[in-house]
Length: 145
Image (cartoon, rainbow, N blue to C red; front, side, top):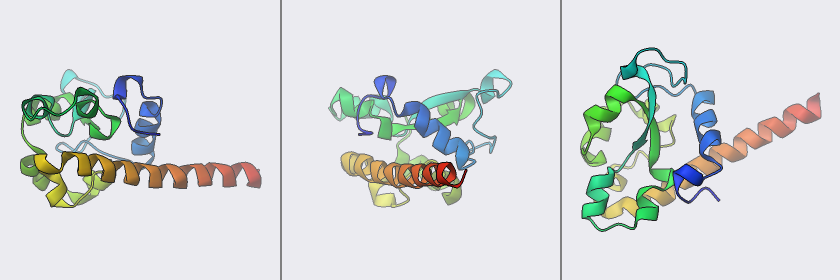
């Protein structure tokens, strides 16, 4: 359902909406994730949690490299600063709450390149759990109105 290449995944806008609903912030500078952010450094970009270059070096299939579960939303500045850094290095520096609001598994062992596929699977579970909560809330609001 939510697996697949992010550019063509119909759940991509919904993932962004869920992050906004959770009041997710940029991992480093704390700005709200907002398409109306001002200044080039604050524009929201799609960030590969496990960097593309490193995954390609590890000969991971392209469809997994660009999987929706490998994408987070960050400011342009933060995205460029992370660049090719492994998640096992940079995610440790981020407040746990900020990671949770973008459905990042907080188990550090999943941040290793050798556990990339496990990371994707766990993140999908977290996203699906939140989708179910969201849809239950929507259904409840329709019934109540």
